[in-house]
Length: 106
Length: 246
Image 1 (tube, each protein chain N blue to C red):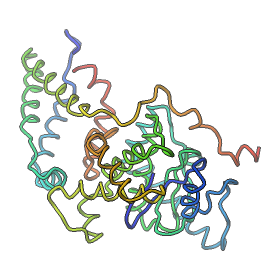
Image 2: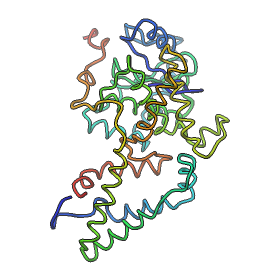
Image 3: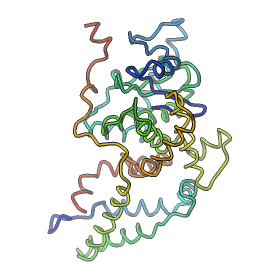
């Protein structure tokens, strides 16, 4: 976590509000049920929105800690499954090469 | 690499064994070793091709799923050039498109892509394969698990398995039906390009499903519609701020 006066919330507060509203929408309920078979959990977006506002108004250290913890938990959840393949260090060497017939035409 | 059911999109794959090549060449007859598409009746070929090119241009310029994928690929070192990396061709059967890893090219079946919405979805699907090819060592030709993983991801994230699309296919189901759809379409896509049994394809999908269904890169979420895709794009553009402040 970036410490000190240079820190700011990972997302703008409007983004937390937008996510919270999207999460609570009827449409999202339907989507979540269709994918996961259960209702969505939206409370954490509300807590993050509150923390974000609190930090903006009062630069609360507790709000900063809470936001960081919440976002790290999201990242951990996204990364918890081992990948099937190995990630590349560099893109494929032939991605930008001309097509074989273009080479012949030249 | 490939879609499933009514929109099978096998990946043409030069360099495969003769058997696998035979499967792909049957579906993508224009993807011969010489590379140049065959010219049919000029007027009908031209109108399908022109329509394909116009719809592709509109997709690349306006669709939020595709714009995010293009940005992500550029960030990974695989900037996409429309003329180099896309090809509108006639295909056999009900195929809508494919990703040719050997030529780094996305094939769009101009005779089978019905309308703009369909084009949007096909391009999204194939760009997910291209994105996987760009960011990972995907062994398209000899590792069925790798192929299965990319097909699970493409079915999951492209909108292939949206509730609306499934209803149009007369596949009715609600609770967790999305996952059933993703599994089924991934299996069909694998069978379209691999000369293997359904059981082997199913086993590969089962083995990789947990990991690949939950790998939402570059979206960070399952984009159920354009709103989700726009939010995902916003998050992608914000990633520097995000990772430097957690």
